[in-house]
Length: 397
Image (cartoon, rainbow, N blue to C red):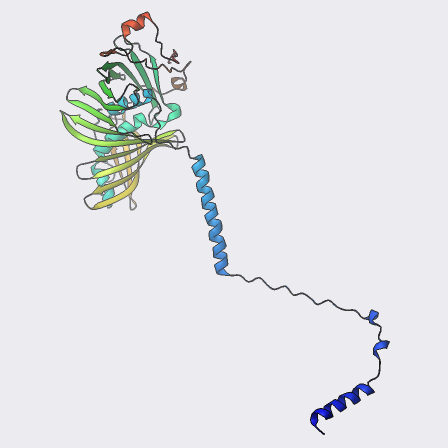
C-alpha cells in the first residue's frame, strides 16, 4: 500500500472514532476578549525638529519685518514746506561760519591704538564745525519751529522765526528777514539772518516760483567769509552740499542728509579732512537728563577703512564761564577725552511758552509780481492786505 493511501485511511479512521461534542458546547457562555491595541512611542527626528524650528523662525521674522514696515514712521524728507526749507538752509549755512576755537585738551595722554579713532582725533576741527551746526538744527521736532510772521523790519517784506533748544536747555532763536524777486524769470531771495550777537547776509536763487528748491544759497559774514549751500534733494531724500570759504578760498566741502524718526530729526554728514574722509551718523540723545550727541562713524584713509562710535557732551568751563564740547572716544578699552570749542547758542533758558503761541502763523508768500520787482511790493502792501490764501496773523511770545 502506498504511503498516501495509508495516510488517508488513518485520517478517516480517526474522524469516525472522534466523539460529537460540538453540539454540547454553550457558545453564549464564552467571553471573547478584544485584542489590546498597543501605542507606539513617537519617534523624534532631529531633521524634522530643525525643519519645524526654522519654519517657525522664518514666519516670526517675516511677521516682525512686516510689523516694523507698517509702523515705521521714518521719513527722509522731513522738511515739508518752503518756510522750513528756507530757514534750514539759511541757519545751517550761517552756523558753519561761527568762529569756533578748537581746544584739543586731552585728559588722558594715552594715545589711542585704533587707527580709525586716531583719524577721527586728527580731524576734530572739521568734525566740531559740523557738530556745532547739528546742535542748532537737530533735535525733537516737537520743540522746534519755523514760522512765517509779519515782518517787523520795514526794509524786508517777509520774516521767519526759527526756534530750537540746545544741549543745555538754552533757547536758540534766529530771525530771517528777506525780500523775494523775479528778474526775467530768475527767482531770488535777498535778506539778513540775525540772532542776538551776529548778522549774516543771505542770498538765494530758486529753481522756480514754488520756492521748493534752491539752485544756490549763500550765507556770508562779509565778502571774504561765506558758505555756499547747494540743494541736492530728490523726491525721496533731502541732502545739501556745503562749501565753506575763507578769503575766497574753499576750506571744506561736506554733504548733509536729513531724516526724521519718532519726531527726532537726525543727520548724516559726509566730508573730507586733510588725509581722510569720513561719514558721521549724528543724533541727539539724553543721558541722565543731559543732552549729548551719539555719533556713528566710518572713516577711510588710503587703503584703510574703519568704523566706530563716540559721544559728545557739553561741559561748563569755570575759567571761560562758557560751555565746551567734550568728546569721549573709546577704542579697545582705552578712553580718550578731548575738549573742543562750541559756538554761541543763546542767553536764556527755553520755556514751554517759547513754543506755544496764541496762534500759529501760516502766512504764505504771495504770487509772482511784475518781472524785476519784489513779489508782493511793499508799497502796495500798505494799501492792500496780503491776499495769499490761508494767511493767519499770529503773535509770538
